[in-house]
Image (cartoon, rainbow, N blue to C red):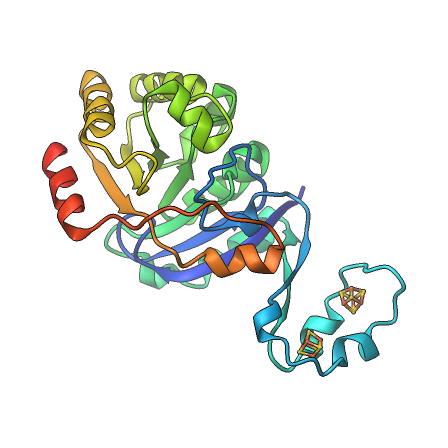
Length: 273
Ligand code: SF4
Ligand code: SF4
C-alpha cells in the first residue's frame, strides 16, 4: 500500500501541541481559493517551475533524455538555481513511520506526528496503518482535516488518533461553496458525529481570510455552532501570503485576499474567549 505525499516538516510547532513531524498528503477534495499549499491539491506528482528563479542556462534541456517528461527529476537535480522541483513522492506506511520515528525523542511533552495535506483522510487505510505503527511505538498522533470525507474514513482512523485538528471555514452554506467549491453540510455533520464518538481532543482551526470570512457575523455563527457541540478548543489562523509564489510555479492564477490586521485578530479572538 502506498500514498503520495509532498512534504514532511520535522520540528514543527504549528500543527498541534509540542514538537511534531507533519506529513503533507497530496490530494484534496476542496478548492479553497486562498490555499497556501496549492501543490497539494492534485494527487498527481508534478514538476514545479519557478520562472523568476530561472537564469536561462538551459542545463535542464541538456540533461533531459526524454521526449515527453517522465518526472524523473534529473533536470531539477542539475538546475543551478533551484527553479525546478519535483512535487510528490510515493511512500509506504512503514517507510513513513521510519522517518517519523527518527525524531521520537523530541516528541516528549505531548508532541508527535501530524497528518495533514491536502486532505490526509482521502487515504484512510494507509493512515490507519501508519497511525497504528505510531501508537504501537508510543508516538502521539494528530489528524489535520477539512472533514469533507465519508464518516467511515474518520471512523477508520479514530482508534489510533489522539487529536483531531478540524478546520471550519464558515457556517453560511453559500459562502462556503463560493470559497471552497463545496457545500459544508458533510463537514458540519461529521463534526457533530465526531464530537459524540471521539474521546480525545478536538481542536477547531479557523483560517481568517480577509475578504472571505473576516466578519464578526460569520465568526459569531461559528462560535454558536461550536457552543452547541460544547467544543471549547479553537485556534484562529490569520491568512498569509507565503504560498503565493507556488501558484506561479504551478502556472495557475490566484484570487487575491487580504491579511487580517492585528486589531481584527484580537477582536475575533475576543469572540472565542
Ligand atoms: S523531469 Fe526528467 S524527463 Fe522531465 S524534463 Fe526533467 S529530466 Fe526531462
Ligand atoms: S537548468 Fe534551471 S536555471 Fe537553467 S534553464 Fe533550466 S530551469 Fe532555468
